[in-house]
Length: 215
Image 1 (cartoon, helix red, strand yellow):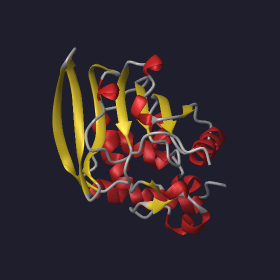
Image 2 (cartoon, one colour):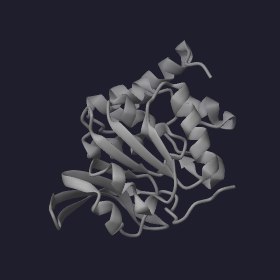
Image 3 (cartoon, helix red, strand yellow):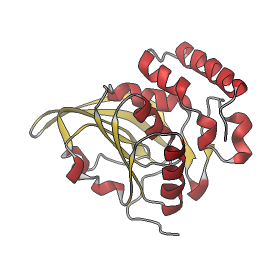
C-alpha cells in the first residue's frame, strides 16, 4: 500500500487538528505526520484513515483515535533510544509512532492474527520493532527495565508485574477504570517501592485480557 500525495495532505490536516485540540509535543506530531496510518487499517475504513476517530481492526480490537495516541505518547516523554514496552500491539500503529521517534520498542500482542499482521506491516515500513506473541500482563522483564511502558487496553488496576519492570524515573501510561470509562493514568516510578499517580482525562478502550488467542 502506497503513501501518496493525497494521504500526506490528509495527515497534515490531521496534525493541524491535533494541535488545535491541545497536543503540543512537536516530536509526537512530527512522528504522526511521518507514519502512514492508512497502512495499518482494514480496507473498509481506508477513506477514514485520517479522521480523528478509532476504527475496528480484526480480532474485535480497534486502532486508537489519533488524539488518544498523541496523548499517551506525549505522557511517555519519549527520548531517542528510550526503551519502551508496549502492551497490546494491535495494528502496530502505536509501535510505529514510537519507533519513528527513535525509541527501542518491545511490543506484546495476545492475538496471534494481530501479532503476525502487525509484525509484517511494521517490517514493510522499515521499522525495527521487537514483537512478541504473548500475555501482556507478564510484560517482558528480560528486556527491561524500561524507560516507559504503554498499555493500549483498559485495565482495572496497573499490574504489579509491569510496575516492577519500570526504571526508577520511568513512566507508565495506561487507561485505568471499568468497562464503561477509564482515566488515562500516568505512573512515575520515584524509588524502589514508590510510585506517583496522576490522571489525564477520560477515555474508552477495549478491555485488556489475560492469556493468548492462537486462532
